[in-house]
Image (tube, rainbow, N blue to C red; front, top):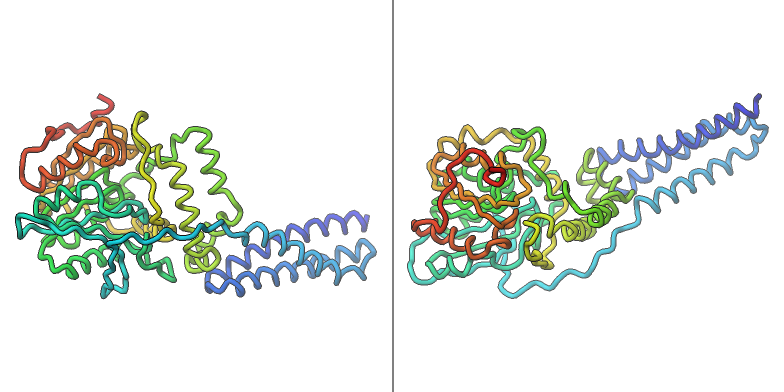
Length: 419
Protein backbone atom coordinates (compact mmCIF):
# COMPACT_ATOMS: atom_id res chain seq x y z
CA UNK A 1 0.00 0.00 0.00
CA UNK A 2 2.86 2.35 0.82
CA UNK A 3 4.38 1.79 -2.61
CA UNK A 4 1.08 2.56 -4.34
CA UNK A 5 0.72 5.75 -2.29
CA UNK A 6 4.31 6.65 -3.06
CA UNK A 7 3.82 6.14 -6.78
CA UNK A 8 0.68 8.27 -6.78
CA UNK A 9 2.43 10.98 -4.80
CA UNK A 10 5.41 10.90 -7.18
CA UNK A 11 3.10 11.44 -10.18
CA UNK A 12 1.45 14.28 -8.28
CA UNK A 13 4.89 15.73 -7.59
CA UNK A 14 5.62 15.85 -11.31
CA UNK A 15 2.36 17.65 -12.08
CA UNK A 16 2.67 20.00 -9.12
CA UNK A 17 6.28 20.87 -9.99
CA UNK A 18 5.33 21.89 -13.52
CA UNK A 19 2.30 23.86 -12.30
CA UNK A 20 4.28 25.61 -9.58
CA UNK A 21 7.08 26.48 -11.98
CA UNK A 22 4.62 28.02 -14.45
CA UNK A 23 2.75 29.92 -11.74
CA UNK A 24 5.87 31.37 -10.16
CA UNK A 25 7.26 32.17 -13.63
CA UNK A 26 4.18 34.33 -14.33
CA UNK A 27 3.98 35.86 -10.85
CA UNK A 28 7.57 37.04 -10.93
CA UNK A 29 7.23 38.17 -14.55
CA UNK A 30 4.35 40.38 -13.42
CA UNK A 31 6.79 42.51 -11.42
CA UNK A 32 9.99 42.32 -13.47
CA UNK A 33 10.95 42.16 -17.12
CA UNK A 34 14.29 40.50 -16.36
CA UNK A 35 14.13 37.10 -18.06
CA UNK A 36 16.82 35.50 -15.83
CA UNK A 37 14.80 36.47 -12.75
CA UNK A 38 11.38 35.17 -13.75
CA UNK A 39 12.82 32.13 -15.54
CA UNK A 40 15.12 31.39 -12.61
CA UNK A 41 12.23 31.76 -10.16
CA UNK A 42 10.30 29.20 -12.17
CA UNK A 43 13.22 26.76 -12.03
CA UNK A 44 13.55 27.23 -8.26
CA UNK A 45 9.84 26.56 -7.84
CA UNK A 46 10.18 23.30 -9.80
CA UNK A 47 13.10 22.27 -7.58
CA UNK A 48 11.29 23.22 -4.36
CA UNK A 49 8.12 21.29 -5.19
CA UNK A 50 10.17 18.34 -6.44
CA UNK A 51 11.87 18.25 -3.03
CA UNK A 52 8.76 18.83 -0.93
CA UNK A 53 6.66 16.17 -2.65
CA UNK A 54 9.34 13.90 -4.06
CA UNK A 55 10.96 13.31 -0.71
CA UNK A 56 7.92 11.68 1.01
CA UNK A 57 7.02 9.89 -2.21
CA UNK A 58 10.42 8.24 -2.50
CA UNK A 59 10.41 7.37 1.19
CA UNK A 60 7.10 5.59 0.76
CA UNK A 61 8.68 3.75 -2.15
CA UNK A 62 11.61 2.78 0.06
CA UNK A 63 14.07 4.87 -1.98
CA UNK A 64 15.07 7.77 0.32
CA UNK A 65 18.63 7.91 -1.10
CA UNK A 66 17.23 8.85 -4.51
CA UNK A 67 15.71 12.13 -3.28
CA UNK A 68 18.66 14.41 -4.21
CA UNK A 69 19.23 12.90 -7.68
CA UNK A 70 15.46 12.88 -8.30
CA UNK A 71 15.21 16.59 -7.50
CA UNK A 72 18.15 17.39 -9.78
CA UNK A 73 17.02 15.20 -12.66
CA UNK A 74 13.39 16.32 -12.46
CA UNK A 75 14.34 20.00 -12.31
CA UNK A 76 16.72 19.67 -15.24
CA UNK A 77 14.19 17.69 -17.29
CA UNK A 78 11.30 20.10 -16.69
CA UNK A 79 13.54 23.09 -17.34
CA UNK A 80 14.91 21.57 -20.54
CA UNK A 81 11.45 20.75 -21.88
CA UNK A 82 10.14 24.21 -20.99
CA UNK A 83 13.19 25.77 -22.58
CA UNK A 84 12.73 23.86 -25.82
CA UNK A 85 9.06 24.84 -25.90
CA UNK A 86 9.17 28.48 -24.81
CA UNK A 87 12.71 29.69 -25.52
CA UNK A 88 13.22 28.49 -29.09
CA UNK A 89 13.01 31.71 -31.16
CA UNK A 90 11.09 32.21 -34.37
CA UNK A 91 13.42 32.74 -37.36
CA UNK A 92 14.21 36.40 -38.03
CA UNK A 93 15.12 37.24 -41.64
CA UNK A 94 17.52 40.12 -42.30
CA UNK A 95 15.78 43.51 -42.37
CA UNK A 96 14.80 45.01 -45.69
CA UNK A 97 16.86 47.91 -46.97
CA UNK A 98 15.49 51.37 -46.20
CA UNK A 99 14.23 52.93 -49.43
CA UNK A 100 15.44 56.31 -50.59
CA UNK A 101 13.32 59.18 -49.40
CA UNK A 102 12.61 57.91 -45.89
CA UNK A 103 13.17 60.64 -43.29
CA UNK A 104 12.49 60.89 -39.55
CA UNK A 105 10.69 63.17 -37.14
CA UNK A 106 12.10 63.32 -33.61
CA UNK A 107 8.99 64.40 -31.73
CA UNK A 108 8.66 65.97 -28.26
CA UNK A 109 6.51 62.94 -27.30
CA UNK A 110 9.72 60.88 -27.43
CA UNK A 111 8.73 59.10 -30.64
CA UNK A 112 11.05 58.90 -33.63
CA UNK A 113 8.78 58.33 -36.59
CA UNK A 114 9.83 57.36 -40.10
CA UNK A 115 7.98 59.14 -42.88
CA UNK A 116 7.93 59.88 -46.58
CA UNK A 117 6.82 63.11 -48.20
CA UNK A 118 5.75 64.20 -51.65
CA UNK A 119 5.68 67.97 -52.04
CA UNK A 120 2.67 69.53 -53.73
CA UNK A 121 2.93 71.50 -56.93
CA UNK A 122 0.68 74.04 -58.58
CA UNK A 123 -1.89 75.53 -56.23
CA UNK A 124 -0.33 76.71 -53.00
CA UNK A 125 -1.89 77.04 -49.57
CA UNK A 126 -3.73 73.75 -49.42
CA UNK A 127 -3.61 71.87 -46.08
CA UNK A 128 -1.17 68.94 -46.07
CA UNK A 129 -2.55 65.41 -46.39
CA UNK A 130 -1.43 62.84 -43.83
CA UNK A 131 -2.09 59.16 -44.54
CA UNK A 132 -2.67 56.98 -41.46
CA UNK A 133 -2.03 53.28 -41.93
CA UNK A 134 -4.02 50.42 -40.48
CA UNK A 135 -3.37 47.71 -37.94
CA UNK A 136 -2.67 49.00 -35.41
CA UNK A 137 0.95 48.50 -36.32
CA UNK A 138 0.74 47.49 -40.00
CA UNK A 139 2.44 50.19 -42.08
CA UNK A 140 2.69 50.42 -45.82
CA UNK A 141 5.83 51.17 -47.80
CA UNK A 142 6.42 54.42 -49.60
CA UNK A 143 3.70 56.76 -50.79
CA UNK A 144 0.14 55.40 -50.62
CA UNK A 145 -2.22 55.12 -53.57
CA UNK A 146 -3.42 58.55 -54.68
CA UNK A 147 -0.40 60.51 -53.43
CA UNK A 148 0.77 61.66 -56.85
CA UNK A 149 -2.65 62.95 -57.86
CA UNK A 150 -2.99 64.87 -54.60
CA UNK A 151 0.50 66.36 -54.91
CA UNK A 152 -0.28 67.44 -58.46
CA UNK A 153 -3.35 69.23 -57.08
CA UNK A 154 -1.20 71.22 -54.66
CA UNK A 155 -1.31 69.11 -51.49
CA UNK A 156 1.86 68.20 -49.63
CA UNK A 157 1.47 64.47 -48.90
CA UNK A 158 2.88 62.63 -45.89
CA UNK A 159 2.75 59.00 -44.81
CA UNK A 160 4.43 57.82 -41.62
CA UNK A 161 5.04 54.64 -39.67
CA UNK A 162 3.13 54.95 -36.41
CA UNK A 163 4.84 54.38 -33.08
CA UNK A 164 6.01 50.78 -32.72
CA UNK A 165 5.67 49.93 -36.42
CA UNK A 166 7.81 49.96 -39.54
CA UNK A 167 11.01 51.94 -39.03
CA UNK A 168 9.70 53.99 -36.13
CA UNK A 169 10.48 53.78 -32.40
CA UNK A 170 9.86 50.54 -30.52
CA UNK A 171 9.08 51.09 -26.84
CA UNK A 172 10.96 49.17 -24.16
CA UNK A 173 7.69 48.92 -22.24
CA UNK A 174 4.90 48.05 -24.69
CA UNK A 175 2.26 49.29 -22.25
CA UNK A 176 3.09 52.74 -23.64
CA UNK A 177 1.29 51.90 -26.89
CA UNK A 178 -2.01 53.68 -26.28
CA UNK A 179 -4.57 55.50 -28.38
CA UNK A 180 -3.68 58.68 -26.49
CA UNK A 181 0.01 58.29 -27.40
CA UNK A 182 -0.83 57.84 -31.09
CA UNK A 183 -3.05 60.93 -30.97
CA UNK A 184 -0.28 62.89 -29.24
CA UNK A 185 2.19 61.77 -31.90
CA UNK A 186 -0.15 62.89 -34.69
CA UNK A 187 -0.61 66.28 -33.07
CA UNK A 188 3.17 66.57 -32.72
CA UNK A 189 3.50 65.69 -36.42
CA UNK A 190 1.07 68.49 -37.29
CA UNK A 191 3.16 70.92 -35.29
CA UNK A 192 6.40 69.61 -36.80
CA UNK A 193 5.22 70.33 -40.35
CA UNK A 194 3.88 73.73 -39.31
CA UNK A 195 0.32 73.18 -40.52
CA UNK A 196 -2.58 75.05 -38.89
CA UNK A 197 -4.90 72.35 -40.23
CA UNK A 198 -4.38 68.94 -41.81
CA UNK A 199 -6.29 66.51 -44.00
CA UNK A 200 -6.43 62.97 -42.63
CA UNK A 201 -6.74 59.89 -44.81
CA UNK A 202 -7.15 56.93 -42.47
CA UNK A 203 -7.40 53.31 -43.55
CA UNK A 204 -8.86 50.64 -41.25
CA UNK A 205 -7.33 51.32 -37.79
CA UNK A 206 -6.19 54.62 -39.32
CA UNK A 207 -9.87 55.54 -39.41
CA UNK A 208 -10.16 54.80 -35.70
CA UNK A 209 -7.10 56.97 -35.05
CA UNK A 210 -8.57 59.72 -37.24
CA UNK A 211 -11.77 59.66 -35.16
CA UNK A 212 -9.78 59.81 -31.92
CA UNK A 213 -7.78 62.76 -33.25
CA UNK A 214 -10.96 64.50 -34.46
CA UNK A 215 -12.44 64.13 -30.99
CA UNK A 216 -9.32 65.62 -29.38
CA UNK A 217 -8.45 68.31 -31.96
CA UNK A 218 -11.47 69.05 -34.16
CA UNK A 219 -10.20 72.55 -34.96
CA UNK A 220 -7.00 71.10 -36.47
CA UNK A 221 -8.64 69.02 -39.20
CA UNK A 222 -9.73 70.53 -42.51
CA UNK A 223 -11.21 67.32 -43.92
CA UNK A 224 -10.96 63.58 -43.35
CA UNK A 225 -11.25 60.55 -45.61
CA UNK A 226 -11.92 57.24 -43.87
CA UNK A 227 -11.51 54.10 -45.96
CA UNK A 228 -12.82 50.86 -44.46
CA UNK A 229 -12.49 52.42 -41.01
CA UNK A 230 -12.23 50.30 -37.90
CA UNK A 231 -14.64 50.84 -35.04
CA UNK A 232 -14.95 54.34 -33.63
CA UNK A 233 -15.36 52.67 -30.24
CA UNK A 234 -14.99 48.92 -30.11
CA UNK A 235 -17.04 48.29 -26.92
CA UNK A 236 -20.09 49.37 -28.93
CA UNK A 237 -19.84 46.01 -30.72
CA UNK A 238 -19.70 43.32 -28.01
CA UNK A 239 -20.18 40.62 -30.64
CA UNK A 240 -16.99 41.70 -32.43
CA UNK A 241 -16.36 43.95 -35.43
CA UNK A 242 -15.46 41.24 -37.94
CA UNK A 243 -12.13 39.63 -38.76
CA UNK A 244 -10.26 38.46 -41.86
CA UNK A 245 -9.46 35.26 -39.95
CA UNK A 246 -13.10 34.19 -39.73
CA UNK A 247 -13.38 32.75 -43.23
CA UNK A 248 -9.90 31.56 -44.18
CA UNK A 249 -9.74 28.54 -46.52
CA UNK A 250 -8.64 25.38 -44.73
CA UNK A 251 -5.03 25.36 -46.04
CA UNK A 252 -4.51 28.97 -44.98
CA UNK A 253 -6.19 28.34 -41.64
CA UNK A 254 -3.73 25.50 -41.01
CA UNK A 255 -0.82 27.85 -41.72
CA UNK A 256 -2.28 30.48 -39.38
CA UNK A 257 -2.82 27.90 -36.64
CA UNK A 258 0.77 26.72 -36.94
CA UNK A 259 2.02 30.27 -36.46
CA UNK A 260 -0.25 31.10 -33.54
CA UNK A 261 -0.24 27.87 -31.53
CA UNK A 262 3.45 27.37 -30.80
CA UNK A 263 4.27 27.06 -27.07
CA UNK A 264 6.54 30.11 -27.29
CA UNK A 265 3.70 32.23 -28.65
CA UNK A 266 1.35 30.94 -25.97
CA UNK A 267 3.86 31.88 -23.27
CA UNK A 268 4.28 35.28 -24.89
CA UNK A 269 0.51 35.75 -24.85
CA UNK A 270 0.35 34.91 -21.14
CA UNK A 271 3.14 37.35 -20.40
CA UNK A 272 1.37 40.08 -22.38
CA UNK A 273 -1.53 39.70 -19.99
CA UNK A 274 0.60 40.22 -16.87
CA UNK A 275 3.48 42.43 -18.02
CA UNK A 276 3.99 43.46 -21.67
CA UNK A 277 7.60 44.43 -20.92
CA UNK A 278 8.31 40.85 -19.80
CA UNK A 279 6.74 39.51 -23.00
CA UNK A 280 8.98 41.78 -25.07
CA UNK A 281 12.04 40.74 -23.04
CA UNK A 282 11.33 37.08 -23.76
CA UNK A 283 10.29 37.60 -27.40
CA UNK A 284 12.06 40.71 -28.75
CA UNK A 285 10.54 43.05 -31.31
CA UNK A 286 12.51 41.68 -34.25
CA UNK A 287 11.23 38.16 -33.67
CA UNK A 288 7.66 39.14 -32.81
CA UNK A 289 7.41 41.46 -35.81
CA UNK A 290 8.79 38.84 -38.21
CA UNK A 291 6.27 36.29 -37.00
CA UNK A 292 3.44 38.81 -37.30
CA UNK A 293 4.49 39.56 -40.86
CA UNK A 294 4.41 35.84 -41.68
CA UNK A 295 0.91 35.64 -40.23
CA UNK A 296 -0.29 38.70 -42.17
CA UNK A 297 1.03 37.22 -45.40
CA UNK A 298 -1.17 34.18 -44.84
CA UNK A 299 -4.33 36.30 -44.76
CA UNK A 300 -3.36 39.16 -47.06
CA UNK A 301 -5.62 38.01 -49.90
CA UNK A 302 -8.53 37.04 -47.66
CA UNK A 303 -9.67 40.63 -47.13
CA UNK A 304 -10.91 41.40 -50.65
CA UNK A 305 -13.51 40.16 -53.08
CA UNK A 306 -13.10 36.63 -54.46
CA UNK A 307 -11.74 37.79 -57.82
CA UNK A 308 -9.47 40.53 -56.47
CA UNK A 309 -5.87 40.75 -57.59
CA UNK A 310 -3.26 39.69 -55.00
CA UNK A 311 -2.41 42.35 -52.46
CA UNK A 312 1.10 43.81 -52.85
CA UNK A 313 3.92 42.68 -50.56
CA UNK A 314 6.61 44.88 -49.05
CA UNK A 315 9.34 44.59 -46.45
CA UNK A 316 8.37 47.32 -43.99
CA UNK A 317 7.73 45.26 -40.87
CA UNK A 318 4.58 45.44 -38.76
CA UNK A 319 4.79 46.07 -35.04
CA UNK A 320 3.46 43.15 -33.01
CA UNK A 321 3.45 44.82 -29.60
CA UNK A 322 2.02 48.05 -30.96
CA UNK A 323 -0.73 46.01 -32.56
CA UNK A 324 -1.62 43.97 -29.49
CA UNK A 325 -1.37 46.63 -26.79
CA UNK A 326 -2.90 49.48 -28.79
CA UNK A 327 -5.86 47.27 -29.71
CA UNK A 328 -6.35 46.35 -26.06
CA UNK A 329 -6.21 50.00 -25.05
CA UNK A 330 -8.68 50.96 -27.79
CA UNK A 331 -11.19 48.63 -26.18
CA UNK A 332 -10.85 50.46 -22.86
CA UNK A 333 -10.86 54.17 -23.79
CA UNK A 334 -13.91 56.38 -23.12
CA UNK A 335 -16.52 56.58 -25.87
CA UNK A 336 -15.52 59.45 -28.23
CA UNK A 337 -18.85 59.51 -30.08
CA UNK A 338 -20.64 62.08 -27.87
CA UNK A 339 -17.89 64.58 -28.66
CA UNK A 340 -17.75 63.60 -32.34
CA UNK A 341 -21.44 64.32 -32.78
CA UNK A 342 -20.61 68.00 -32.45
CA UNK A 343 -17.61 68.01 -34.81
CA UNK A 344 -18.40 69.97 -37.99
CA UNK A 345 -15.60 68.66 -40.22
CA UNK A 346 -16.35 67.29 -43.71
CA UNK A 347 -15.67 63.55 -43.74
CA UNK A 348 -15.82 61.05 -46.60
CA UNK A 349 -16.41 57.44 -45.57
CA UNK A 350 -15.70 54.64 -48.06
CA UNK A 351 -17.16 51.16 -47.67
CA UNK A 352 -16.12 48.26 -49.90
CA UNK A 353 -18.63 45.64 -51.00
CA UNK A 354 -16.57 42.75 -49.63
CA UNK A 355 -15.22 44.42 -46.48
CA UNK A 356 -14.94 41.88 -43.66
CA UNK A 357 -15.85 44.53 -41.09
CA UNK A 358 -19.49 44.49 -40.08
CA UNK A 359 -21.71 47.03 -41.80
CA UNK A 360 -22.67 48.52 -38.45
CA UNK A 361 -19.02 49.43 -37.81
CA UNK A 362 -18.93 51.55 -40.96
CA UNK A 363 -22.39 53.03 -40.53
CA UNK A 364 -21.54 54.13 -37.00
CA UNK A 365 -19.33 56.82 -38.57
CA UNK A 366 -22.11 58.06 -40.82
CA UNK A 367 -24.62 58.42 -38.00
CA UNK A 368 -22.08 59.92 -35.61
CA UNK A 369 -20.30 62.52 -37.76
CA UNK A 370 -22.80 65.21 -38.79
CA UNK A 371 -20.94 66.40 -41.93
CA UNK A 372 -20.09 62.95 -43.27
CA UNK A 373 -20.76 61.37 -46.66
CA UNK A 374 -20.83 57.60 -47.13
CA UNK A 375 -19.84 56.03 -50.45
CA UNK A 376 -20.32 52.36 -51.28
CA UNK A 377 -17.65 50.85 -53.55
CA UNK A 378 -18.66 47.68 -55.45
CA UNK A 379 -15.92 45.21 -56.29
CA UNK A 380 -13.67 46.24 -53.41
CA UNK A 381 -12.86 44.59 -50.12
CA UNK A 382 -11.17 45.99 -47.04
CA UNK A 383 -8.41 47.56 -49.16
CA UNK A 384 -10.35 49.79 -51.52
CA UNK A 385 -7.08 51.17 -52.88
CA UNK A 386 -6.16 47.67 -54.02
CA UNK A 387 -9.60 46.57 -55.22
CA UNK A 388 -10.69 49.73 -57.06
CA UNK A 389 -7.61 51.97 -57.30
CA UNK A 390 -8.94 54.31 -60.00
CA UNK A 391 -12.19 54.96 -58.18
CA UNK A 392 -10.34 55.29 -54.87
CA UNK A 393 -8.06 57.97 -56.29
CA UNK A 394 -10.97 59.73 -57.95
CA UNK A 395 -13.03 59.81 -54.76
CA UNK A 396 -10.25 61.26 -52.62
CA UNK A 397 -9.28 63.87 -55.20
CA UNK A 398 -12.84 64.98 -55.87
CA UNK A 399 -13.71 65.21 -52.18
CA UNK A 400 -10.63 67.23 -51.26
CA UNK A 401 -11.09 69.58 -54.22
CA UNK A 402 -14.81 70.11 -53.51
CA UNK A 403 -15.85 68.55 -56.79
CA UNK A 404 -18.73 66.16 -57.49
CA UNK A 405 -17.92 62.62 -56.43
CA UNK A 406 -17.51 60.07 -59.24
CA UNK A 407 -20.19 57.89 -57.62
CA UNK A 408 -23.27 59.00 -55.67
CA UNK A 409 -23.37 58.99 -51.90
CA UNK A 410 -25.11 56.07 -50.23
CA UNK A 411 -27.95 57.35 -48.07
CA UNK A 412 -29.43 54.10 -46.82
CA UNK A 413 -29.04 52.69 -43.32
CA UNK A 414 -28.65 49.01 -44.24
CA UNK A 415 -25.82 47.13 -45.91
CA UNK A 416 -26.28 47.47 -49.69
CA UNK A 417 -24.31 44.24 -50.18
CA UNK A 418 -27.29 42.40 -48.67
CA UNK A 419 -30.01 44.30 -50.48
